[in-house]
Image (cartoon, rainbow, N blue to C red; front, top):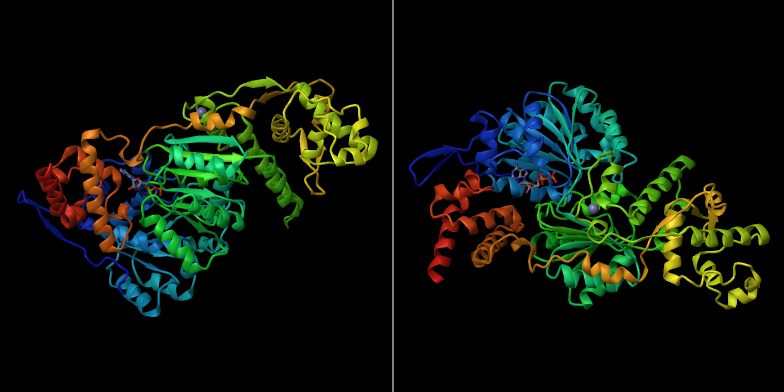
Length: 637
Ligand code: ADP
Ligand code: ZN
């Protein structure tokens, strides 16, 4: 089997009689490549500046959110500069799809990684040496082998693209030790430009990437990290399965999405539960064999409307454009992680949901995990403050997006597209409630040397004569029963917010018991008032209201009714082609291109060539077939 796109078409006859070459190397400049190869009219955001910088031989460090279009930043320069663009990526399982997508565009691409046998690798190596490739994808561990380095030394290189560059950062969420070796590229090939790309946004990570990849001279391009089409929605965890089901049924029926869980067990259970409810759900976690993982990933990418239930082992590099929701049923460990995971929704720019359910138990559990983790104190402190920031995001009463971007050092005004903006939460003066809780904890510790978890503390405040209360004689405490004005649920919310404000901590000894912090005193002494978010009984109702986007299929959302039947006809045409080529449908054409075709109903190849995403090669491969599909539809209707 040959792993590279050998169908490199030199000239395409048009029905207008004119001819168009797509051999990019003979074209002048980036815009030509963008139009002829990719079929796009114009660059987005910083793309043009980046592309020109790299074509000119400069190094670049590119930070752009998922879906902003990082790939073009190295693909276009690789096609414009002479030689082969080497793309370093940790995502072995996705390389085949990436190469297939480029082949569809008429770009000569191949990969070298451990999934290939010797014969296939040799074919790719020979194609490389013969100058028959535009782009070569290589896994970092493979690149660093002497054999591969020698191979590269014998060919002509256009550039090095280091994708998922945050993998070099130890503090990021995807550290890969192999990435550390990549700094030597600069020493070995000082004249080959390097472009490092990531969707990770914190300054710490950026500095670390620049240092560790020896990108001191590189120009930094930092885009806005806002993802305006994603609606953020964070709810209190009650009966989480029911809540999830409600989200899937009411807001995302038939949509593709990802459900993130913290543990493998929970992934398996949740996937089973959803299947039993008639939702097509598949599990994914590191405990499943490689074959099962590959199969589930491939089904998620290729079939419509699959729900992937996964640990965070799933998702990096998944470029499926139409993931309509990402749901977290456990709280992520950091804002960074949350941002990356939710970022996998809505790459195509149409509305998508990021939904998270969290509760007190999440906080307690994660604190325990931090306490039990190996690593020194500063490492644990760092994990602790990451968790605090995440908690802060969950409990904020202001705009979620503002808070999220603030974490990455970017500012914006309230977004109008998060739960807090859409249905502003009520705030209430929780000072007295906080004092009741804090003094209960204080007394038990000072007077009796005892520490307890949330449940027992709430029982004491609410004056419940439980066996434990009786056994420990807690009925005689002066605080017993002074908190009957709040429900158990409301008390849980108070506790979470006290944790989020660092007015309480989960005891270092573990077991989920709660202890005061240095800051608790100010509240106890009445020196500090506390505005809390009112949650409680309204949550379920709000989860229905805040996220309602009445639509059946998101992909049709911005299409007028009259154009929908032809859009569906084009989709089924595309499905047939994708199936016969064994690639995901979006590799043939994105929904956005089909939508444009459905609206314009082009009647010639010339007219079709103006549609975004229809480059020369795709016009040649599919133009006639699309025109036939349109004609057939029109005859039948
Ligand atoms: P990223 O790697 O940053 O997550 P991709 O490179 O996968 O994003 O691009 C996201 C989507 O946007 C892709 O479908 C891509 O084809 C499309 N895209 C990128 N740049 C442009 C552009 N200039 N014009 C139109 N579509 C674009
Ligand atoms: Zn908002």
